[in-house]
Length: 606
Ligand code: AGP
Image (cartoon, rainbow, N blue to C red):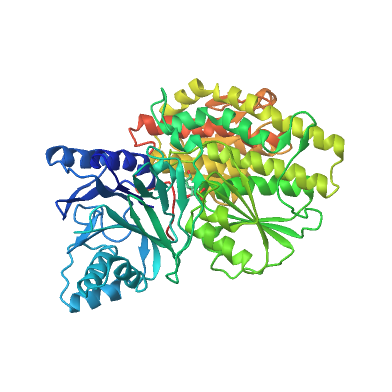
């Protein structure tokens, strides 16, 4: 939830730290800070709010050094104030931290009883005091660091400066990711490849329990037992380095428009356009599988729900999709003849990781549909099914969502064929349908002008209801999530069939109703629901396709016509209108589209 960077450099470090924090702001932006050694003394600059506030502080009071650490925060313990902003300093120690020190209260009490004076409400500050106390006993930095880590329980990615130990940074990881970057005569440590992208494309991820001493010559990495370990250096993909908005106002806008291309690249990795056959990695015995268990959070969970509809319908394979934070604690019954699939853009979502581990510890085979392959989830599954949409920076997930759905669609076709539910000819037909999706998605983005007009009305609403049936009921959930998370308007997504079981009481003139209904087997029922809400004065925005528009009951405020598409890919084709609606409403409301309040891109804490 926070972003960390450390540089053992040869050039002025402060601007470079801030440049890296700018690439990390998607992980949290409640406050930011940097620390460096100046003439052997630790100096710090911090500011609450966005990174630009820190830049003002640094401009007014420059920090001149070549080695330093930086942090951008998503507040867990202690409000988003300056005194809670990282780096935290105690004596000779400056520390930045991502995660939660779960035993910080007892450690804080112990340290205060010994005379330590705390300046913040954070859990992180105990690390600085603990390490400072270990150093005061005369331990060498690395031994003092190890002794400190042995006292911590919980999740942490740490980067530490020690006063007097110039040009050295200590790093440690237990849970949230931490990567070491290898430069030419310079070394780096950061939360992920994107943070290090401006400096190097050679990175090695620390594993849980690892700690390291990093200096100009390289990194000495040690495992939890204190013995030296080697961690492989991988070459960062160019995409993690190239992350610009182009001529779009927001990353989210760019990412919505990038979807056809992102899905094209993704689909190309799962089907052969020449033979029209699927090509899905992993030795999964689809024919012998008893069940699939999908675990995920947020938008990734919703992609999983769409996958359930597709896989069950095509492959006659039972699929359970569960919110990871519920699944991991309810002690679900597990069968080793099932396949666990984790869905995640970041590959670091704590609840999803924990739910996955619950399954794998009980013998389930596991796969993950991921955008960040080099991630904790990526390292723990039997097979990774990557999406190829490039780094997603906007906190609200869009291109990763449709790319995830595209992968699940390919898996559904693969499983159906492997289980003998479809023959070669049908597999080829469905693959060709899937190959059509990017073009139709591009056409659906062409609805943007109509969406912009609807956004002007929706922006005035206090509540909005999204309705759909079948896979469109999942898209209704996604439309509502997008709207609420970036425009802060309350919205609910519902299976349209549930309308009369409660939500219809919400219908009034002031509550826009967004109904998603392509002309498919659910259409007639959705059209009836539409009449029911219009009869009660509900202003309906009807998103359908040409045949659905021709059969639409009269009275909708707006009918938006997405391109006609096979039901297999209608979730892909109908996604852009609801994403664009949320985007334009948020822009009209002046919301911070790419970095909505209270949110972060990767939820690496429970
Ligand atoms: C989506 O718009 C949200 N930002 C959020 O729900 C996100 O999908 C969720 O936190 C899961 O993240 P992940 O895909 O990285 O696991």
